[in-house]
Length: 128
Length: 128
Image (cartoon, rainbow over all chains, first blue to last red; front, side, top):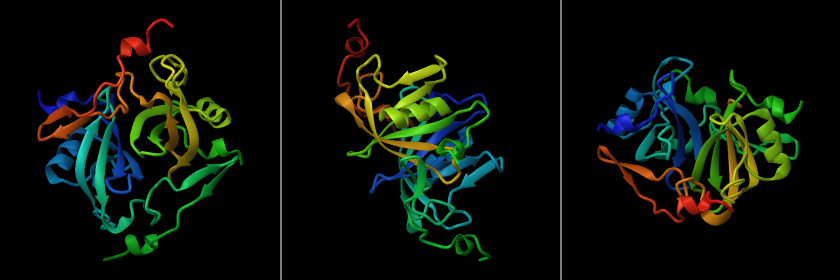
């Protein structure tokens, strides 16, 4: 059986993917994969996602330069969620210029921003 | 604003939640939350999910005893994904009796099971 057939794609042909830094183990992003994105990620050795808003393949870092080098791929018990272990080039995974997208922590009944902006997003996505 | 209103619930009133061991940083499970599950998780200090298959609240460990003590809750940049940092009571998060649900690793073009079964599921879910 083709390894891609073991994945339980949802009605939209997608599965969620959690991306974790292979060294720090920090969770960087949560995104989506279709079959083509997962096949390309595995063959190219870099994170490739399916952008639900833009409805196209999204090679992480294609605009910002913040590529994710893909080291390991895991599938869960139900076959419907994937984990990527990556090296985050540039140390910034979030479009806000932070290390991780998960920078808001619940503190009592408030979300507190607990991570600094490492790079101005205008610089990350500016004309190059 | 109520902190629960900052969450961008999808059309089904749900958001995905990634649960990570606070010590080992291993990703244990990927599940779903509705507003009630997230409110209860925060107030009870344990992982509570929304079971999409059973269509009801699911207090992790209510059958297996493998409760997840909830220490920290994070929200991502888009407000549509949550991370739980937990202590996994019993060291087993997966219904197969393994530490994590993500026990299948892609090795070339095959998924390899890389984690041992720590406890027979028949014992975890047997009559008590």
